[in-house]
Length: 380
Ligand code: XIL
Image 1: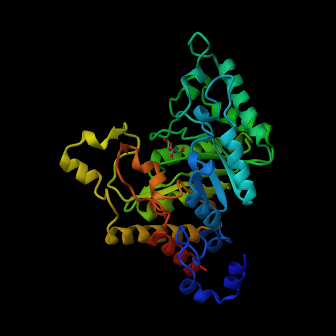
Image 2: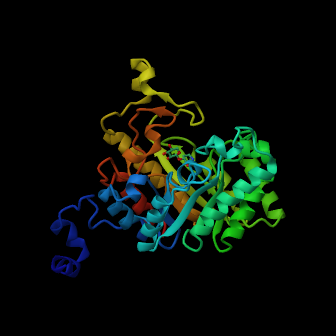
Image 3: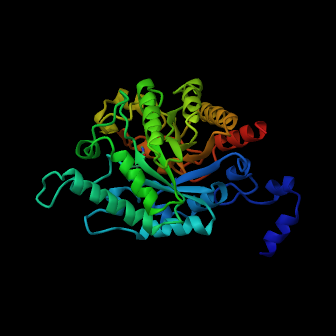
């Protein structure tokens, strides 16, 4: 305590000379959330281990740099509601308590999705497909139970995730097949009834695909024309160092913003590895020959400085563009705290070493962090 008082009495500019780098090397560095405090929330997706307090370094980073949190997996149906009569709320309770302790903007992800949802959800006890009425009842129960439990505490929900296909039509998921196209409206209605004050979002990826983007826009217009309570649309943002071009992203931010709802970048990560379509079947890197392994997993040990710089420049480019549209964007959430946590190490190719986040495998800030903070200052 006394040491802290002494330190805080010193001029800020001298801090770096006097204070050993903290365990995450971030003492004396400005916090990300401070750099963007007048612009948008800065969020991070938290893993189960982080939520359970098993990664103290990660938590230090989260508490310093982020003012919004999303659970990476624990609120997905298979995790929170693995069996018909069993909910697994303990990790979610811890997640919400962590957010409240730090006065964070707490996001729930996700209520209705075609993935990470057990088969039993769509079946009766004999294993036959449920009819519309029974599945609607099940969806309502799920949403009421979860949203109701965290009413007033989880501030925003990804109500429906990834419901539009590349061709702009609704994805032929089990939700769609059994309930028909109003499953989305129903999900939003249930969520709104369960917590009328919660913000409700539609979340999607690959807006670069023109017909898909148009499909999402059509869907949002339909929801609005039917007076569905919808506050925002999420752009996931699982991007690459050199794809998609910044202009392409800006080209869909603009029409989406005309829909009069908040825009959020909900799952940002920038892969440093070569492009491989995320919708492909997951394969193991060991199934490739040596040459292909080298091509698809070029940085198994560390990111070379030149690529580190490219990554930093890409992040700066993205944040400069987000800042330009800060009147439209309400939150930017990173889809992990550090490189080791990122799903891009294991989807769509398992066993690679990716470097997509702002903090490395030891939770040390990467040049991309400074690049973003610099972009924030330049944009003011
Ligand atoms: C990913 C998680 O990060 C992984 O841990 C999990 O194995 C698969 O799902 N779109 C979403 C997120 O909306 O929920 C996904 O998260 C990534 C793609």
